[in-house]
Length: 271
Image 1 (spheres, rainbow, N blue to C red):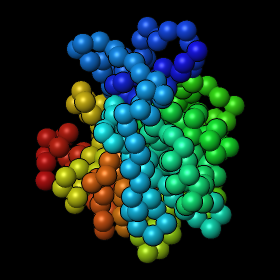
Image 2 (tube, rainbow, N blue to C red; image 1 turned 60 degrees about the horizontal axis):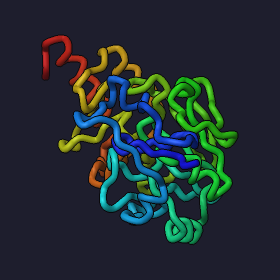
Image 3 (tube, one colour; image 1 turned 180 degrees about the vertical axis):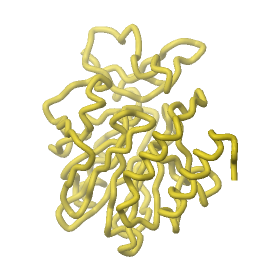
């Protein structure tokens, strides 16, 4: 039986005799069901028409995307540390050439994903590298393909290896998490955020939303909480969910300024 993949959000489901009747992730108000209805594919079908794109982002950080774009179009990031590599976020494609390329970079010790929109085919990646998957327990209901490799953690932070730290920010999703990599950006620190903290075209700022496609904002107090959650960490650079979405410097200041601007706008006093 195939493991169907939602063509809109890229999430792989547990094996069934036929495609699911619905995608709960797309039916949630943070995503959407296309006007033409839900469409489904499989990993085998994707492997025939798509391939992975692998690009160095900076020393110790490699991006892994899909071409042509599929579903939401995010790319994953492989963080390389002396104690092993972590795959941050996930894509809906994995194949033998991609596995070989990642093994040449040191393989994958663990996987962590910012929020359910990027769960993709995380179980396939986990099995290929025998790697646990770290998700916040608040997102348990959104796992469409349960697997023993998934380790749900609780609380506000989770220390991993190589100095890496998961930080629960909430906001876009209750268990939305970001990854702090202290050795990145020439030891000035990097934050990998998916779109829990969204990198926008004006890289002096970032964005925060409950739903990006449906333009539903977050309450000001939630945005203040997100900014407070990352405030104690040193980071000069942010990598968002897509290839060009990078704040190259002063990222800590960008988060601070953006949270303040967001709350002022909600209060009717944009500055």
